[in-house]
Amino acid sequence: MVRRDDLFLQTKFTFRPGQDERLPYDPRAPIAIQVEQSFARSLEHLGVDVIDSYVLHGPLQRTGLTDADWEAWRAMEAIHDSGRTRLLGVSNVALEQLELLCRQARVLPRFVQNRCFAVQGWDRRLREFCAANEIVYQGFSLLTANREAMTHPELIRIAQRHGRTVSQIIFRFALESGMMPLTGTTDADHMREDLAVFDFRLSPEEVARIETLNEVTRLC
Ligand SMILES: NC(=O)c1ccc[n+]([C@@H]2O[C@H](COP(=O)([O-])OP(=O)(O)OC[C@H]3O[C@@H](n4cnc5c(N)ncnc54)[C@H](OP(=O)(O)O)[C@@H]3O)[C@@H](O)[C@H]2O)c1
Image (cartoon, rainbow, N blue to C red; front, side, top):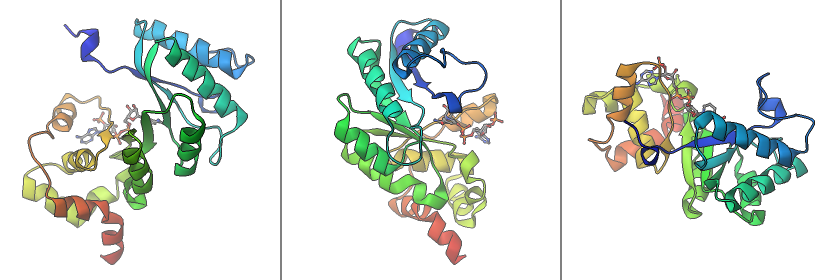
């Protein structure tokens, strides 16, 4: 029997362009109402009154924050004020946008959820900002965004040295770099494998090698 306290529930508000046809809100309503409607739908689906983290799926544009972003964030802050979410977060965000959000938000984001590419130094600068501002960095697509990196001889050598799979090395690296790795699976063996990363450690040299896999790739 799983108890509510055993779970960390996180869900998102997504603007119209990121939604499919199953809209959880009236798209003609003001953004603040869309956030309320979307959140209410999430509570209903999850069968709870309170969630742990409510995330803005992403700012409307790749740079800066629009009025719509702020309207959504203010509505999320109101949900936080009401006690229906314990924490707020933001996803698919650039460093410049996160800095802006942190400067002007009344309730600060406590999570950043970004796709994490080895070829982009695993989002290093953004992760550094998070670490300095008490924000937990949730890395997603650690496997699917890094198919090429996963075949890198250096990563395979590290996996062999530890008697682990490359996926496990990536998740372990993510943990040791201060990330909260997110993944998903439909396969029970994969799930067991993904969870079996708490009984070994990478050396600082190995972490540094994986951090700079991009540069290592270019040298090979
Ligand atoms: N904020 C956003 O915009 C956003 C977007 C996408 C995802 N996310 C979040 O990130 C989470 C993970 O996303 P993701 O799918 O991109 O994660 P991922 O870890 O890159 O990929 C998961 C895929 O890898 C496979 N897999 C898992 N463990 C494996 C293993 N040990 N060996 C081999 N294959 C393995 C799974 O397939 P099998 O089923 O075959 O195991 C699944 O298709 C999602 O659940 C969601 O919460 C957020």
